[in-house]
Image (spheres, rainbow, N blue to C red):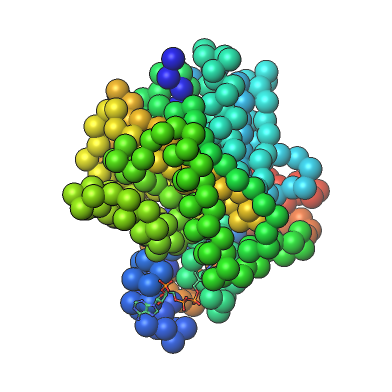
Length: 387
Ligand code: CAA
């Protein structure tokens, strides 16, 4: 029996910042951002969206009458949690009208949370092949105005269903992971922006990638020649390029060209959205699916990295019913209908924060189906405009 990713959907708001504007305002060379960092644009998330609404807007595309009653768990990976006690998944259960006899859990280990969800789901479906697990990666990446990390901000959500006989990706059973207490990136409870040791975090990412890649090869006997493409966690797309370059000499010249071309396909969407922490690897996988020429049976390698730190290398083969037409169309329409913000507008939206008292938010600038309309009695108020 094959188990893996059956559906993979994405959502981010339409408002974005062009990074050439950011470069000019911050007195940087635009090519530092476009080439040195590998980003062109970043999603700007309004105060009327949070991890829950981003997730609901992504998940509503893949949860419907055909699979709703099969969903046995919601595993919600996020590092932008809205409550220290209650999981974001339980809000999602209500917004999506999911059944009552399910588990609703939030998972946290920086950008690795959604991968924990995928792996736990894989194990669960093996025991319960008639069930599906909804896995979410939803975040808002914030470093602060005028910080080195500013160019690597962004946000959004991916939603995946993990099932038996999946259409998109059959996950292999073998996987290599590594964990170590490291202070490369963190966000204390009292902060809305992350703290990061930038260059150190890049080095730890590469060290973890090399370690788990080695471990995976030893476990499986597979080598780089067994892979058609790699998808990486992309906090900024140059990071994935650095990781790929670290192992590229293991491939012959023809394969190096193929891996580089597929890497370009895997960063098309991330380059325009920015970092979305837990969802980033899976947006890159979606980008690879939609922009490369792939065939059923081909093997993809995936590297997940969450600062602090946890890394995992795992793999899968393209499913027999692999079809990307609808997704490609959605992204074309989405990128064609986005609204570019000026620097002043971006700084205003970025600086808007939820107060710690009751508030009614102005929803007129947010066209999403699920929105945060305010706070009442210390409870976030969510609205589904689709009903
Ligand atoms: N043309 C082309 N390239 C240029 C250039 C130009 N005109 N000017 C500079 N560059 C290049 C530099 O040579 C450098 O390239 P290399 O990395 O290959 O050496 C690159 O642009 C970036 O330049 P700097 O290192 O000077 O950039 P910086 O000091 O401003 O910071 C950063 C870059 C460390 C990534 C910073 O943006 C940051 O801290 N980001 C957040 C942390 C992060 O994303 N870390 C990634 C690993 S952690 C993780 O993955 C988890 C997560 O999601 C956070």
